[in-house]
Image 1 (cartoon, helix red, strand yellow):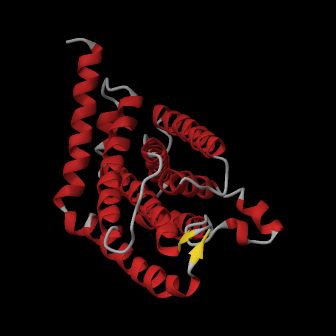
Image 2 (cartoon, rainbow, N blue to C red):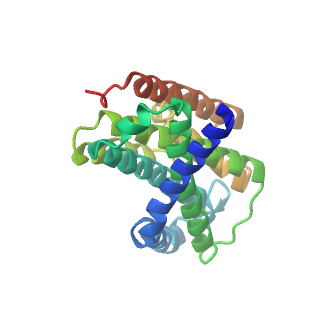
Length: 258
């Protein structure tokens, strides 16, 4: 059997294992995002949105839909890979995979693929929920797909890196609580950064989530607080950086091999 064929079998096996893992407990992995986003739509969209009216020339409900979808993609991409990889490391079965002839890049792709599958399913579910509350029109389908794929890949890689360095299960929850949540809420999900004072607009430009949310919003509404080219470039740059980091630490066995 050729190396490419064996690598494909390894990739498919890891991917199926990861998908089976979150689908087996779908009540815990797929239902909560739908419930959470429904509450966001009801509270921020219906109740608060009626008082705000329009944001950047569109209804407030339509404005926040892309951000809420992106929020669910970020959260599920990260949590799926972080919890799965850390569990494999904790049970010490990841070592068997690392000493096998499977290339490091295939291992990374398998875990990232599983996290992306969960994120895409959740994105579809949240999008379907949003149809109940807002009249959604997609201006640029290509940018919607490109942005969500790049964002999901990025946070899958981030979850993998965090799982490698995590010592306990509590370490996995630190990043979502103290990093992802603040960056997401300050990333323009519920407001346009153009409403901020000039100083805080410049500060917001240092938040990578801002580019993800606005790139996704451009795909839906055809408008963005940042240049779409810059948003895609930021996403690609962070993906390359995170993949290089993940590849290096796995290839060296940092935090895994004793």
